Image (spheres, rainbow, N blue to C red):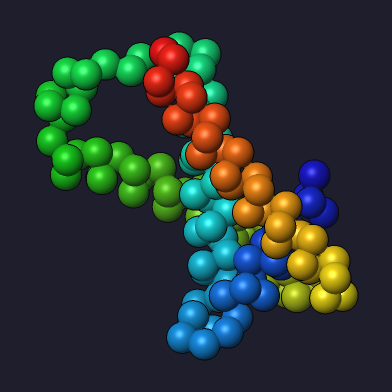
Length: 125
């Protein structure tokens, strides 16, 4: 599993390692991984009724509290990933251009399927 995540991070790192995001490519790759994880975990929590989708919830909790909770969840995960998957580990991964192209297609497809699953779960729960 670690190799798969390293390849995922390498593909995102190589994507962000161009232009204006070159200086923050490592951070951007980690953030992209966390966002995909959040997307999948949130969909699964709704699917298994751990989080109830309630219309009144959005009016009960102020948006600033929601952002604070999200931030407090994001930061520890970022530090754990930063210690587990160092920049040097990501740069050790080697892929040729055709493999990278396939990887990008798989990642985009995975993200699209994840978003569609989340939409389906929200509509049907």
